[in-house]
Amino acid sequence: MVELLSPAGDFTSLSAVVKNGADAVYIGLEGVNMRINASNFQINNIKQVSKICQDYGSKLYVCTNTILKDKDILSLSKQIPLLAEYDVDGIILSDIALIENCTDCGLEAHISVQENITNTKSLRVLKKLHAKRAILSRELSINEIKNIASKSPIETEIFIHGAMCMAISGRCFLSYGLYGRSANCGDCLQPCRKNWKLSFDYDKNDKVINSSDLKTEEESFYISEAYDNSYRTTFFSPKDMAMIEYMPELIDTGVDAFKIEGRARSADYAAAATSVYREAIDLYQKDKDNYQYNPNWMRRLNEVFNRGFDTGFYFNTPYEINENNKSKYIKKDIGKVINYYNKVEVAEIKIWDNLRIGDELMIQGPTTGSVRHVIDSMEINNNKTDFVHKGQNVGVRIPYKLRKNDFVYKLTKRVEGN
Image (tube, rainbow, N blue to C red; front, side):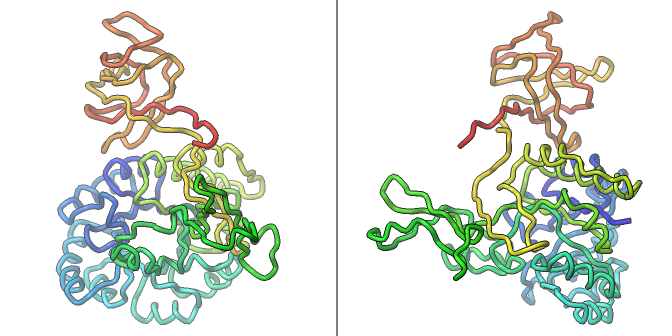
């Protein structure tokens, strides 16, 4: 069976993905992973993370996938035995120098997408080095992946959902060139996502940049006119990948693991993506002859942060672009949990925004993960009410076990253009 591998940038996301069916979780080790701006985990957190994963039957992989210099190799060489002691299952490596350190400690060595693996000969070399798995390059088509997986002597893994990079497997110098912050060391400021201004001859009034000499509708980036009569575009910024509509094709490639991107994203994103792909995988593997795609899956993915969706390089070269969040909902911080009464399933919430029956809440916390609930019952001082003003404590019936200090958000539908 294919493994579903989900991201966790902090304990809240960790709880969210294990509770929503992740077979495995990957986290970043502070200082040596490609999401330096995410919360990440320190070495002394790993034992607790490992225990949580074991409680839910999920494997744990730790990312060390930045460019490593001698001092970094020395530091990691000392930490790898500790990771093994804490029952981590494997290490995701961008540098083959550490494969031996991992295998000597009984840890699986997974080769990062940063290595840009695009052929079977590389996989045979990695087999000789005792690597357990390789994450294949994002720039491969689905047919190329199927061919490589059928001949691979080691396990293979592919990305199926999340952000796409303008550069080959993240090997980009734009952030470093502009700000001195290296993407290859995990510190990308994502200037590619910004709105770029284009200067050109206004007499030509040309509002289109063509990506090739073919100049077809599909290969054009349209430029919008700004307040200062300049023209701006986000042509560096690709849409997010979403392969939920192609589960049969993905499973039939024969790869061993599907990876969801997003360690720097919120717990609700991690929960939604994990839940949706879990359902699709299980449904197909249970009865592939009668499998049917559920349009509700895409609706749920659209409810959390995204830049619009594309299929990456799986079927063609991606051309559509977008910088902004295209989620259907805005998540507003409106309160925190003061107490939760298990017997009556009621949360006491201190709120700093108005609430009414029918409002949809999202509650997130390190142990709770991320859950959603539409309010159907509220009380103040044991009196039922349909509306509560901000600044009050209110009892809300919520059939999920919550914890003190969990964050409470109100979801409102996004107005087009916001």
